[in-house]
Image (cartoon, rainbow, N blue to C red; front, top):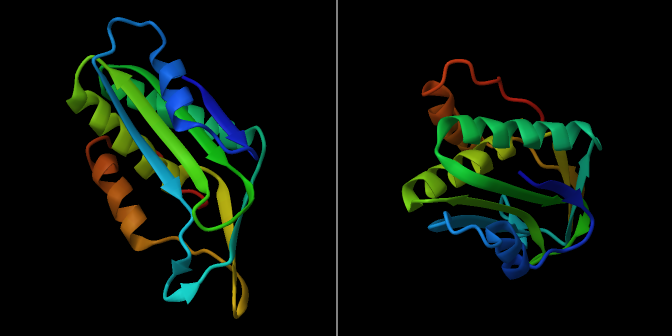
Length: 161
């Protein structure tokens, strides 16, 4: 269950190959890659700066991955999230899940990403032509996480974005 928060970019192919390894049980790999957009809320974005609390953020991500393991029959989960100053087109986040079958991998990957968006302690600041602004939580992210929350009443409440 590798979890990394890092400044450096990542190689998606190499990361998936490492996650799969030589495990013959792996029949499916589902992944999500998030990238920096050049526009948000109708305004151009020159850079996106991500901040986090070292240690606390990794523990939060590990907890989300453990929840995915408890809900689905999956083999492994990888989360890589970058921090620091990023530009449009830069990769921000990677979530990859291995399992024997695709349904479990797809569901767990989507769950991890939905919970990461609402539970993991990251803060985002955009540099726009009008100056810098903190990115606010989106109702759509809370709604996406809520559908998982509804299926498990003991799920944690939303935290920082």
